[in-house]
Image 1: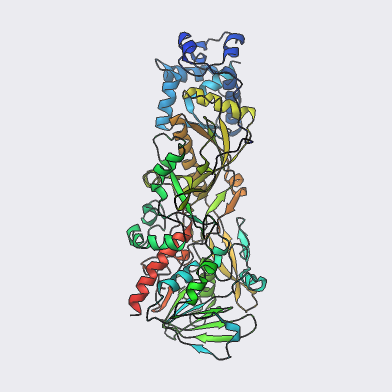
Image 2: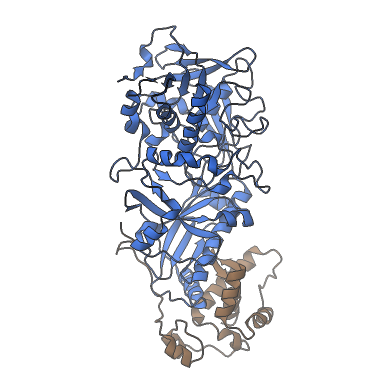
Length: 138
Length: 499
């Protein structure tokens, strides 16, 4: 028996992941990293850059954040019509990410079952909050 | 060798007096006949159909449906020798220990015995369904030797294994009528009657025993059976129908003094494309997608909640299989990239697959079969099935799928998307397993069950029910292997009763 055939198409992240050497040199850990985005894409300065710097692929995060915000706006009866605001998100995120990396907090979220759904995708809550902040700052 | 007897050739007024009448020639009936082979017990088996599919006979199954969409009653089972094994998929998996437990959070749960009561019969049942060496959850080392598992982090879902019935080589699956027909012909203490439809259960005046079984053919013949003991093995739907329709002594029907016959109907909902599973590394082992030969067994992976997780999170059984590659949109890819990076994984080669799931419903007395005014060609009232699932059924499945997603991310190996966010959308995607269960449920208390721990109908000394209709709870495991084991246990009991 065989697995999926050659015809079965996956997808490739547009980004090219590079190893831990450059990443470590840049002080962001050994996560996959997008060279073109890192070197070529500039985001406007934000008072939340200390938090947003934890996002390796900001473009992907913005897209996830937009979807999460849209979901909240459409489904949560008690949510403000304008959706979540940066200040409130940042306050929670700074508490969660104080002296911890996103990877560490993600591990903790997963261990404790702190998960949310974004268009059905089951994701760690802190990551999604960070994505929402990125969307609001984009 | 005993040739099968065509009931249409019996003279009018025939009265048969076997020790044991088996009503129905599906997996339960055939198993029971085989179990009692070469004993002093004079057994007769009455099968409605012949050796092949026949439209007129199949039409006797027709009924109506109400509530949640379900298959037509004449399409979800087969009425000829071998019964519904004539269209089953051969999927086998034993019940889990928790399936037998009374759970205070699950109304109507609890079998009269534990899994230990069935274990002595599993080996023979496994042989009868021809599923090879008993592996199931012990298959992991053999399968890992073929290709690695998709890693799961610690949690409540684990990689379980189906096995598959096979007739020979890797031809799937075993059709009991075809496979065991010759064996039945060679049993000296057995007579098999084809085209013989049980139409009425005649009770003694004091309603404590079955006296007669009326049998009719589509050609207009009828005859009478006066067995010492009778076992109904017509399937969960038809057993209930015959009992409800037999109102000669008790208007409510046979065994229905507590209004339980036909209630608690169950099947396994199978929501299609219920989720999308992503493997960050890309390809997954073939055994996730296809039945895979390992020695004399054919095996396929499934994700199952552990008994501990079921207890702790109050969820029921589910068996999740990986199906086909799927395309993803930009948001999907963004979610995958973001999550993979957050857990330190590389999703450059990720692939996504649709996921199917068969799951267990909670027992529900209002999911039920009732008689209608419509009649079939034999004059028997037709059935109506009222079908429904609950919010809890939907939520429990989601809880288990989210746990699987959590564990995939925890291992850095993948993630999950739940494709249906609302119960109505999920219900719209439901197929069903054709695994009819529950309508003559087993319980030691006559007020809570139709049959007792030995499958004897409460209040009747000599009427028994075989098959998955007696399951009080349903597991997510496919019923055939388990109903065969339970029938072997019944056979052992009847040997003692008829000694």
